[in-house]
Image (cartoon, rainbow, N blue to C red):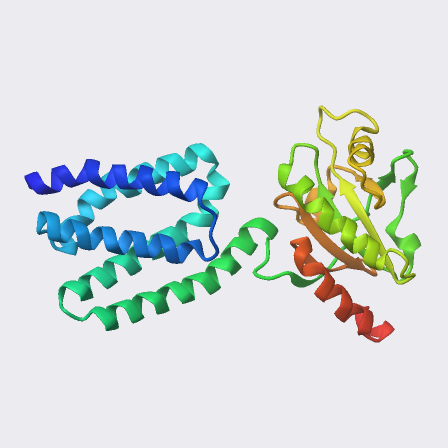
Length: 283
């Protein structure tokens, strides 16, 4: 490794720290575009300052940026790293491609090729993230449940989903250690306000208790926060039955078949479609 390449390692590390600091403070839509442009411009700067080709910058970049980024992401949470790392690597490949074409005097073709790569990564990245979080590439699914469903009301009385007949059941799975669950509850309340009086729909939060939770703690939290939607408690084995990979996860269930598993934001559109379906179409 040359002297210039050795100097570049701490330079890339400082760039990593700066990018993470800015990213944590400035929230913008399409942050992948900002990340790509910043890496691209930094590569061009390094070429002009150190006179190294993109190929010569790869090893310092891996040593000063990629490896520390991997370590930081794993320390922050391995599951989050699995979800977002492929997208980051594609951003870097796109930036290297654009830089290479830039240095060859083909700026526009390089930028177009890089943005096409990023656009594809965004589309398939969304599917990858959905798979990591919810176990499927998209929200709509069709999975017949064969296990016995075990739920309880806050009073401790058993609740059998079969007693709801042909109702469409919207079940929002959560636990008390999930900050994202509490951020999503206003959406569940809005959903309940909209469909709660529809006799074809049943909507409820479903708490999966932690070992530390006491009886009634989950419903007490919801009441103190002013939420009015119904609440159920699920047996721990329901995580496996419903394939709950992360919290919160919203499931649409009808006639013992899962029709949707994903983010509650997508539920109104799916619910409206199901309400328009003929009664025998969801068996």
